[in-house]
Length: 312
Image (cartoon, rainbow, N blue to C red; front, side, top):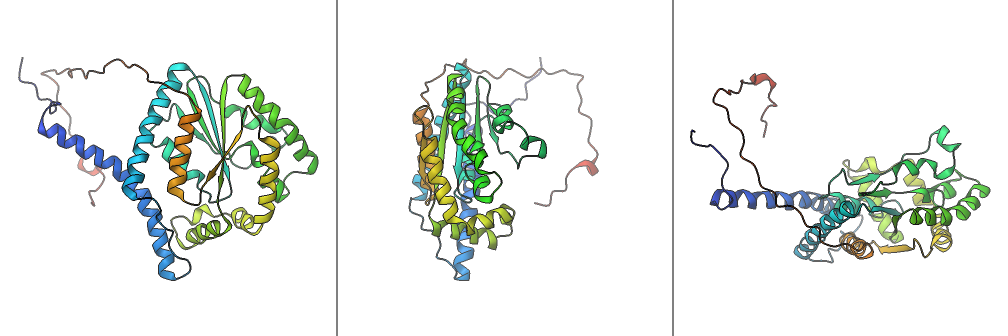
């Protein structure tokens, strides 16, 4: 047999260098999102409209803890798959409260075939004629799956109530039904966790201004978002009623203080890891097999005009 042309061995300096580069790439992926947050703060500060947000947690501490918690999320994912658990996590809160940022950090290192996000659009005419919970049911997990709801059936207690998309009879029926619906989910074996992200009036105003001034994030502002800003007090009353009437022993609400986005991300992930008991799963040691090589194998050239131009 001829000499093998393989990859650097696990003990080589070249392999170690490549591992370091991969780790650096992982950090850069997270850093890219954080730099964007900082860039927006500088943008507003330059225009003199609002002071930049205070970075109240040291950057190196934030990154160290985030990666540690994300490694634990991978263990939780393995446990969910191994035990065929069904985990549902609801993320609710005002517009710009930071729900999407936490969801990104949770899903960032996980297998999308195990952990997926459900972010439903406004209901269609047909869906509006259905049982209210019907359109959410198909998104519930099977055994070995995690579903994160970026807003959920609690739309009825929030936006639908405040904006007049449901009447009082529909709202009353929702509050009668939702505790039993959630108890039924829990009895079926679903682990249900509910988070409300809490921000101040001033912080929401700042985040909306940041989105208005940044063309990259203007898509996040819809006419409904702007109207929600005007109706801050109506949303406050709706939130208080919702928490009071749907905080049940089987599926309690957990409030995340979210004015400081970094702390909110870490606290939420840390709490999620604590409310879902998990353990280590033994894995069979993975051994990379030798690639099969044939003496008569030749790669055909690809035409140069098929390549993406190397602008960078």
